[in-house]
Length: 543
Ligand code: KIV
Ligand code: ZN
Image (cartoon, rainbow, N blue to C red):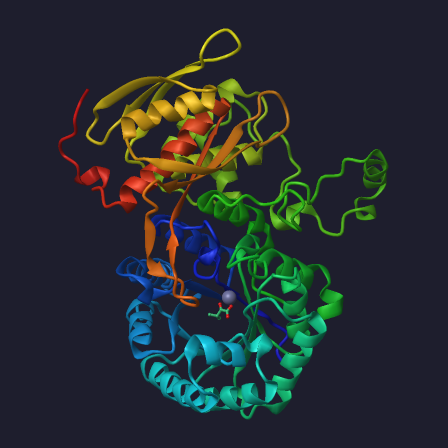
């Protein structure tokens, strides 16, 4: 069996089914680009039949990330995959989106557990087998790379699974993915399930077996590794472990376990581990889902050693308390990366080392902002540079732009904020408001201009680095007051979801960072409601 585990990333599909995560197509494209640079083998880019927007989003990823650049036609590109229920309509939609990729894949699924067949599908087992045969055959007639998943395999009868999977192979499936859809199994059980499938499914030696676990009992990574030990050679994962309910198996945990414990597993992945921290940040900022500080590999405390005894041991030998070097996952120990007098070239080189490939215009803008920041902050770290670039990428998707903010607060009067926003077309809109505190007053003033009624679901603020002059990072999550729902449904439970909008801002002043974060989320609502993009607006009201 090959000593290589394919990494199938489903951040943009199952991850986006997380409560509260909804990404714009521009964000999805950015994440897909980063996943390609990270070295994932397969990107599940979405569920194309969900809505025309989703189909377009997957198609764009297929075109732009799933093909080598013109100047390097031999470059390796990931497989681009689209999810489809086992219906012709879904399969057609998936194909019409992924066919633009150099290496397209259709992933179709149908439930096989008694509870799903009886209550969700209202189909008997014979009908399920027939539908799998028919739909995998159909998908294979369109695309040479077809993945089939028996949904809720963790609670399915193993004998029935061997039969269904055998038929899927005969019908042309090239990957069989075994989902523990509700995160019910234990590592021992899941490992045995995969071992049983490996030894009892006719034709299994000709296909790749994949595992897809959910974390309802906190066992997703352990189950995935048990599946790999039993012979699976594809792991389905998401960045930061985001996903339905308690989430999916996290990419970073599986990859770093295989990497750190190579002697135990003897398996490789194609992941450039030094990109992990950067992609984790990007996904957290774009989805508005913070990473818990004690999260393995990517949590803020994962490499922090506070206790004196630990520090003493670390100084003598890093290996005393550290099983991985932070640099291995892209967390830099270096504090001073660039000084106030560093040039554009040095900034570009450092950003490239951190995995950011900016266009010349974005680089100009980043350099300008870098100089402004370097004037305020004496010590600039990689984390500062990352926050700066993330903040800039949020501002690139703006309808209204924050031109200025003035806040008065304290114990001797009402907190008051005055905001100046620039509207598309150049008009400036100024408004002042009072609030219970400076952030509230700022949001009230922004609301008065933007006039998009919303509910603030989450507000998080944290310092990028230590020190009094640290950059503050703010993430917010909003919902519209009229409960704008996603036009699309979840592929699995087919329920419409209330849409939420994440926003991000970074600044040395946390009220400014809050204003930017809030405005960036409101900008997303404006676009989601169908407002024309700035470049399409010719006339704007000027106050
Ligand atoms: O968890 C699950 O069963 C899924 C399938 C669609 C593969 O996400
Ligand atoms: Zn899933």
